[in-house]
Length: 261
Image (cartoon, rainbow, N blue to C red; front, side):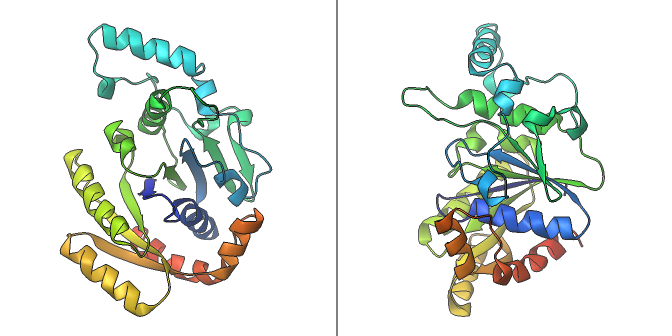
């Protein structure tokens, strides 16, 4: 598994889980690329230890107006939005200019783009950039890309997941989160992604974990790991510090052992 999409409902802990997985992969000797494809949440770069985010890939592709213009022209010419690719050739991390790719402590970060102003318009160009970048991203054997997606399922509508190898759904203790995992599993099946798994997050007790696993099993979705409530993570998020989570990190090995046996 080289390109792993991480999704779920808002507040379930996608970005925190991305950070924990990145740390675990790095400790196993992998070179980790984190792709921030969440148009709204601006906290991932801080969680990873960066003072600020890199320039967005949207600018690398020419900027929002240029991408919108290209999309409009191609659609007017009869192309479907789902078929449009902004890159004609493959791209590797070696081809990405340094202002678009930051590295800290063995973890690299690229950011697709953010919605920062009122009346800015839809995030469709960012979705197209995400899909094009992931479809054309070429990784070496020791590289793994973790893609932190926006909350919900709009990224499936834009076809972002067509460029990944598997989908991890982060599920917190709520029925909304369970139902969304079931919906994501169905949508992944529609684009022929067979590998969709769940990671439980913010779990306060074994009893809650067992109840969630039972419900998800009824939905036909496999749980591959559980991350407990971790006070250190909450304090890090509250203070705006890089995520550590020593207690939660101990459970990440279970997830990585499944993904990288």
